[in-house]
Length: 264
Ligand code: R5P
Image (spheres, rainbow, N blue to C red):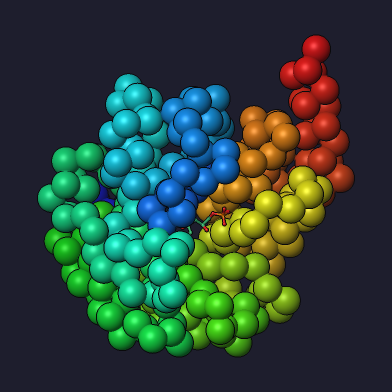
């Protein structure tokens, strides 16, 4: 691995703990003005100091993030579809590597849809992006998107993560599932989990805790942070789990106490 790539990887994944709290706010690329992200800058400003890495689109980066903020960027590079389409898997590459470099990103992210109609196309998108990223020393995060017809179980997610890693992704993002250790143990690169739909805060903390204790390198969490009643206390509680090995109860207690203080 060359110096630039290693350096970017160490900006994304904290070398002291070997873990990452990535804040995902890229939802607008196919969902439009997602609840909690209508005014992206207002949502992001208080959260950025507590995120190790920020995952978003180039439009969001340019319009909602102060370039003075020294936060590593994971830029979403795939898209071309919307929630009103029948099949979300028909994605292409939407940003050039030249523009990603101009934006000084640490990593680029792209979704693959294993088992879907456009599996072949999205896997070739990933391979192409990895070739370009390798030339520039940029980290590639493969997102294992799951079509409606797929089951989020260890068998399917292991398949999708392993294929992404075999194609050369440096980090894979997937969903938590029963027997999650099987997914991690058969994937040769770090695995981070998406949070998924908004659930109760304690349940989201348990999800993060279960994933970390079964081998995840971190979380790439969005809605369970920015749609929380108290986003800053929530991201701080997630950090305690990811970086400090806090229990679910300890993290939830922290969330509640910070939330209470905030209201005073
Ligand atoms: C989904 O396609 C996006 O990449 C999101 O970044 C991802 O789903 C993580 O966000 P959440 O925790 O809200 O699921």
